[in-house]
Amino acid sequence: MTTLTKPGLRPANPNFSSGPCAKRPGWSVEALKAAALGRSHRAKIGKSKLEQAIELTREILKVPANYRIGIVPASDTGAVEMALWSLLGERGVDMVAWESFGSGWVTDVVKQLKLADMRKFEAGYGQLPDLTQVDFDRDVVFTWNGTTSGVRVPNGDFIPANRKGLTICDATSAAFAQRLDFEKLDVVTFSWQKALGGEGAHGMLILSPRAVERLETYKPTWPLPKIFRLTSGGKLIEGIFKGETINTPSMLCVEDYLDALRWAKSIGGLEALIARADANAAVLDRFAGKSAWLGHLAVDPATRSNTSVCLSFTDPDVAALDADGQATFAKGIVSSLDKEGVAYDIGSYRDAPPGLRIWCGATVETADLEALLPWLDWAFATQKASLKAAA
Image (cartoon, rainbow, N blue to C red; front, side, top):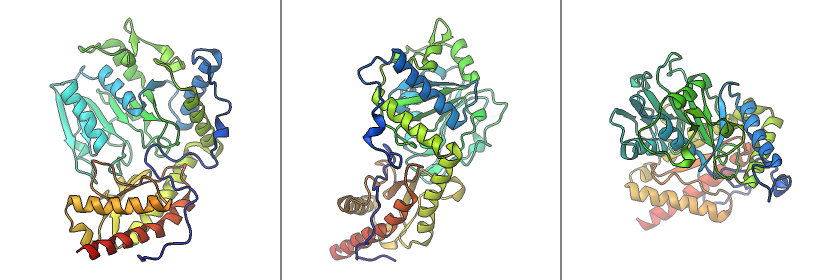
């Protein structure tokens, strides 16, 4: 029930941003005291920490032993673009998109790489495209979890095991919260600042043996910047996947990522992380199911994200507003919660329909989400009253 009376209980941690995401429970700057500051990343101590980050990533995500894992520049964006520029062009490509970032990869392939043999399969916010139309004899590029739409693929069953093309998967808001079917994925990318709440600027690039084979047998016709080069003399630069990064990483960020990985391992690894995200998403799902003013943007329950949960307005008066009016209404809710210090950065992504986007990954405490719910009702009631007064 909506009310103009402010709730008494506040979230202990009001950080519900979808990236950078909340730090792990109990985090403090003391967690970074062992960082190799002022030391070269090529020194024994620096390289050792980078190797630890790679191996803990493999252990927690359950990455197959024959897949390479590398730390690369420029966050998830850098990792995806490194894959697109290095691997595409050998055969036709199917681009699959249903939200902002997936659409961005389409733009890269169409306007930057200018690939002629390219097909697009797109859907609006809240839905998946028809995945049965995708041809896996071609290369396929898609996001596992649409960060800005709250729509994910439910599993990897739509990808055939005997595919001829490569699957390139942007998994940045899925890793550490959803089960990635690595046997169906040839390239997987993500960034540290998402599901484990690490610091930004670094990306992870995971390659299957099939992706490595492509790199060693195919040379793109376009020039590759230094930070995109994964081969030398026709052979994979193995050092990249052993902690010898292409450019200088922040050892402070590396230490923070290591702390997040150790926390993940301490609570039970991937299964525990998924369980925490599922429990968090369930809090919002129950709320949306009972709410008279808010509902899921994702139409099909089977495709709803358990991390970047996107919500849209169902109240008739608000839904009747034009896009600008709804955007103003949403900004009012977000601003009032920010001023109260109970929820930060929960507005929908700038390209997405007006509404709310609340991060439910494993570093968020379920109790904080439960404490947030009455505040959502309060903020809506306050904005609705202002809307009526202005009418």
